[in-house]
Every structure is written in C-alpha cells, then in structure tokens.
Length: 143
Image (cartoon, rainbow, N blue to C red; front, side, top):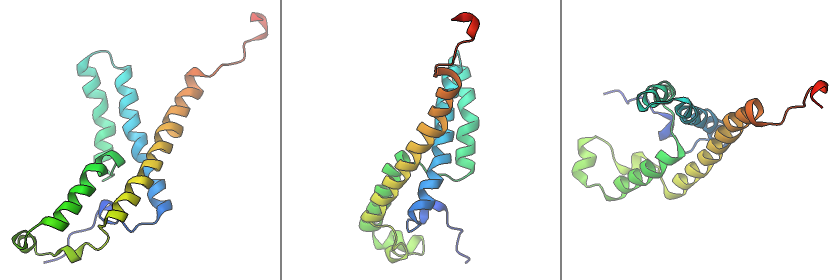
C-alpha cells in the first residue's frame, strides 16, 4: 500500500526560517477573518465573511500555533500511550514518528507563534494602521 503524502504539520524537523515564513500567511488569513467580521453588522454577515479566509486557510493545509497547542500534545500522548492494537490497526509504530518529540513540539509552537505575530501585527495590523489610523498631514488651507 503506498504511503500517504505527508502534510506540513508532520514535518517537525523543518528549518526554523521556513516555519517562521510560513507562519506569516497563516495568521494573515486568521486576522483577515477577524477584521472582516468587525466590518459586518449582523451575526449572519459575520458568519458569512469569515468563511472565505478560513476556507483558504484550511484548503492550503496551514497549521496555526493555537491549534498546535492542542494537536502536538495530543500526538505526543498518542505516541507515548497508545497500545499495540492501535499501532497494528494503522500499520505503523511509534518509531515511525521520530520528529514528534516534546522539544520538537515546543520548537514548532514557538517558531509558528513568532510567524503568527509577524503575520497578524505587521501584515494586517500595520496595514490597517497605515490606511486608517495614522495621522495625515493636513492641507495648507486648514492650518
């Protein structure tokens, strides 16, 4: 039976710079959903406007630092506590996941969080600040 394709979330050994860079568009989509919901008036509008950025997030197979705070410890728990019948049923062993370690999980969350901070604060927040909140010079006639 052919091995299923590995998703990005399975590659904890990925280099830090790549993980950091990948964290930026992840949080841009998440923050975009939040900002778009702020612009909606009704609950139905809010639900409708968050679907496209979240669907794009899921379609791209992105992971998020907050989601990883659940999934990585859960994976570590399964790797450590699952019985032989579980491993037999999926035709794998715990040794098939050497990158799934506590140190790897912490590294993943820290680097992904830094990327999420850059994506949310600089790529979304700073753009909105530049567009709407910064002080603009007043025309000479108003002085």
